[in-house]
Length: 81
Image 1 (cartoon, rainbow, N blue to C red):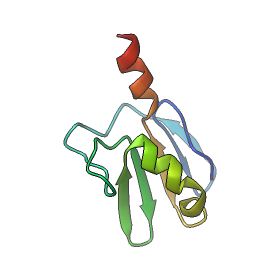
Image 2: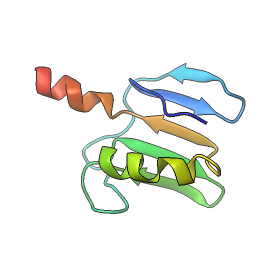
Image 3: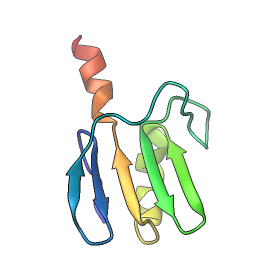
Image 4: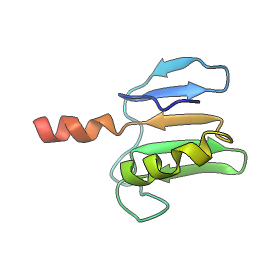
């Protein structure tokens, strides 16, 4: 499983769907409490991560993740605005 960009989700079947942003400012990183930009679905539920922690844990989680939803590209959009 590889990380998507610009709000893409890559599922188990390898399909990629582009979605509107689903994560809001109310969604917080499970590691540090910062705004979450990455949602990972695993057997036990879902995990939310900021861009930093999503990248940090991506290699380990990709082996067990059912889907990886990454909206971290929004960080660059915010800087350009």
